[in-house]
Length: 76
Image (cartoon, rainbow, N blue to C red; front, side, top):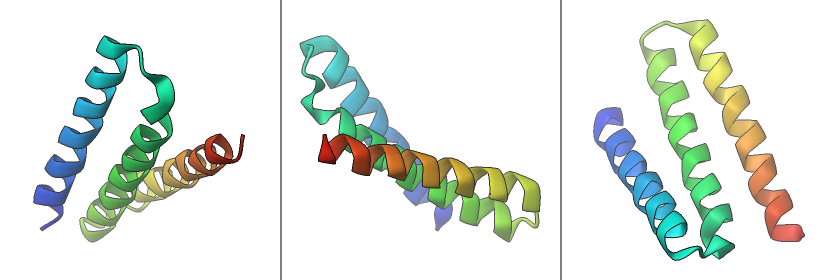
């Protein structure tokens, strides 16, 4: 299950990043950050399921940081 969600989030991040770069439209950057944060959350749960604690902690920390950046970019 995590594999399909991870592939879907990766595709969305890639498409949003490519669109943002090619058009020069930086208004969707916060949403790219949000989807990237969700991807890191899914990766953290997947690594936790594989019993790789430290990698999952790192993914959860990266998720929290990216989510914080997303919220700050919406407020500014």
